[in-house]
Length: 110
Image (cartoon, rainbow, N blue to C red; front, side):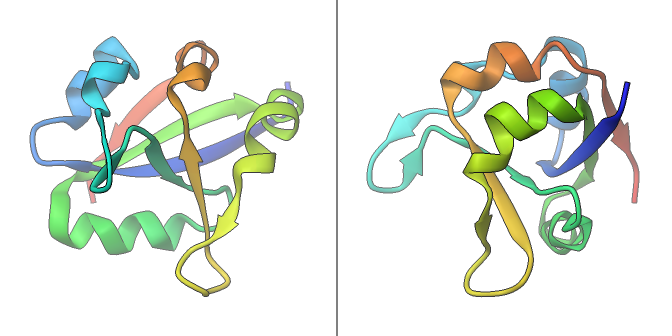
C-alpha cells in the first residue's frame, strides 16, 4: 500500500483517547461561530504546522497513515492554505470520520 501520513497536535490528555477510540463527532462539537465540528490536521507535507500547535497543546502529535488513493479521493480536496502560508491544513468533517478510523493512529511524543 502506498501511504500518506497526516498530523494532528492533540490537546493535553486527549491524544491517547484518539488512538484508542478513533475520531467521533462528540469529540469535535458543532457550535457556530466558535466550533465548526471539524477535526483539523496538518496535511502530508506540513508536519511543522502540527509541531507549532504542539507548543500550546503539549500532548503529542497524532499521526494517521492513510492509503494514498483514499487520501486523494476523500481528503486531498479538503486541503487549504493555513492562514495564507505555504503550510496546508486539512479540516476533516464528521462524515469522513468512519474512513479516517479505518487507518492506524500513533501518538508520538515531541
